[in-house]
Image (tube, rainbow, N blue to C red):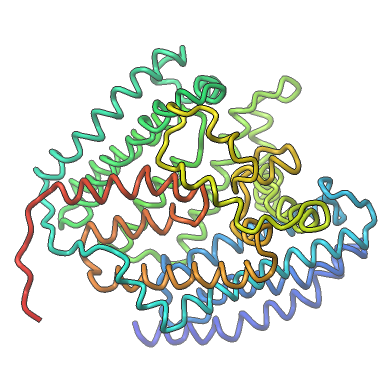
Amino acid sequence: MQTVAGVRALFARVALPLGFFAALLLLPEATEDPALRSVVPWFVVLIMLQVAPAMLSGRPDLFSPPVSGGLTGAFSTLSGLLSFFVIGELRMGLLHSSDPNQTADVAIQTILAMIVGTLGHYVGFYSRFGARWRVLFPRMGDIVWSGRRVLLVALIPAVLFVVAYTIFQSRVGVSLFDVTELARGKETWRSDPTLSWMLRGVEMGFVPALLYFTWAASQRGNRSLLVAAVVCVLVGLLVLRLGQRGPLAFGVLIAVIVFHYLRRRIPIWVFIAVYFVGIVASNIMYHWRVDDPDTPRIEAVSQVIDDPAQVLTTHEKERQRFIIMAYIMEEFPDTYPYLLGESWVGMVTAFVPRWIWPEKGESYEWSDNRIVFRISGIPAPTPYIGVLYSNFSWVGIVFGTMLLGFFHRGLYEWRLREARDPGTNLLYALILIFFAPTSMGISATLQYVVPVWLLTRLMGRRAPRSPR
């Protein structure tokens, strides 16, 4: 096995530079648009940096922060590049200027910001200083997980889920077994912020499901794990009826991370294939939710799964992550002055739910989750690098991503310290997926990480610590 791993690592070290060198030479010649031709090499460099931790390490850990973050980031970058190739030119409608040269300058500046952010995160993660941050995380290895205690503790969020879902079902007006009317589910809560408690309660269904799945993954038998997987799928289908795809995708990903560390390591190529299938499913659910009278649903779904490039470009067209980031780079500081930390002011009210204060979101016009909406009118989340740049320019990108790298290194070292503990691995997955120093990241942490940590503590039974 070591020989095979060594050959694979050597092949990756040789094939990666050769492949990207060929891409630098050949891809610019695949378009006749001069602006796009000037931008393509920068895209290639960014993708190379993003996949480097996965390709250049002898035995990469799939769900270490640089590897998993780099692979998902490379998917996003590749999707953005392919979307420009599909339309045949470097076109970004949100930008004020229609001059191709200025558009190319903004695109290159945006890619440079992403390159600097990627390198800043690597510096933070791979430095020795980041390992000391493991003291920020709680000791979990002395808590004994038993099936009976897990079921008792899981009853608390399960009851909240059942109550919230019962109320949601009474409002949505379609059959409980109908998972096709996603638009109806979203209409139930989207226009009324006082129903945020119902939304949170329904999404809370993943907490007992993941607790049970984690316990089953820590056992030797496969029967309990199969039952737990079925429970997670059922909860995911029920939550999907809210009209949101994110909770289902994150729930599945967290279960995969737990399985990866407690049962069997997942090869990187399997993760890439499954991630691509997930993008296909996301596209299908989006077109199924958005009922276009001019295009039947079945026809719309078939259009987004014709070929791999179409899958990725459709995903990028819906989210417009690169274009949104470029728009932020164009607007700050030419149109708006740097925010100098104003976007984080709203976090002081993170513990106040919207069903108590419905106007909370509108009270801070420059809150990080409202920056894009404030300057463009598009209700899209602001990328973390975009938050850093709109507040503190390039200095913010460098130090903000480096600090996040320190945090991720401490998180990873904390998991390694108790690598077989169920609670440690579950919390690691939750923090890795949900936490970010943004409003959405803090909100998700309060919704998932904190309840799981408290419920794990409520299990109560502790094993005696062995002397060092």
